[in-house]
Image 1 (cartoon, rainbow, N blue to C red):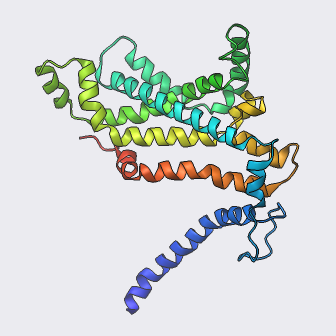
Image 2 (cartoon, rainbow, N blue to C red; image 1 turned 45 degrees about the vertical axis):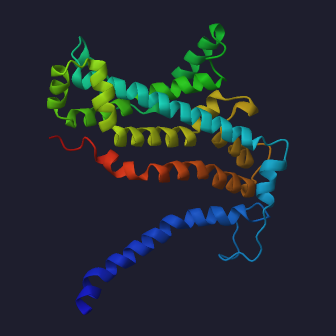
Image 3 (cartoon, rainbow, N blue to C red; image 1 turned 90 degrees about the horizontal axis):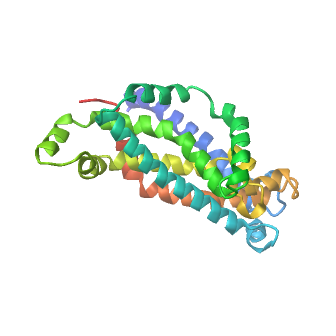
Length: 283
């Protein structure tokens, strides 16, 4: 027992302290969401009175289309996650298995682009989409589809590299066996690669969904009208807009907005570990 205390007690104490440190901000947000004063000041860590006034503000105030913001975020994030996985998987399979002119240059160019922070392209994206709006109003600045195009373009490089690493780990003998059986490249892709890549595809879609759902800078720049905003942009007005510093509804909206992400994360949990390590070891 003494030996166990010397060797393992400090590990358990460290683990408990780190868990408490990580959970404290979440607990503070939950506590603030039930605080009727609408502030972040907490007088007691065990609330005596629980109020749902902040949640009622989100759903009863006509100036706050919270459900519309949630719908916009879910639609944009879901569409980006699905399309980015489809395009990324097909591109990764092509770069890994097919032979075509410019293959080496293309994959190196994708790697080079990822070296630069995305924030550097913010001004250029604004100018480009503003000009696109002149001849295609449905795809330019201030539109959700324009924002989706920007998201898809920014996610392609990371997704392709992540998926390519997994495709490279798949034995080439499977492709050769499929060719002997008369399978085309498309049949090999759908019948061999896609079933084997289910874990990593789930991880890529999850990361794309979470990243898009929580993204603020581009959404704030592109979505001007209140009805078209995502939940991240919409909630920002509680602490920096016409509602001043109203942290109570902001905390309540953040708690509700996190529910879809938690549900998706838990439903794909069995794929996450295997998907994140897929492609890290070849052979």
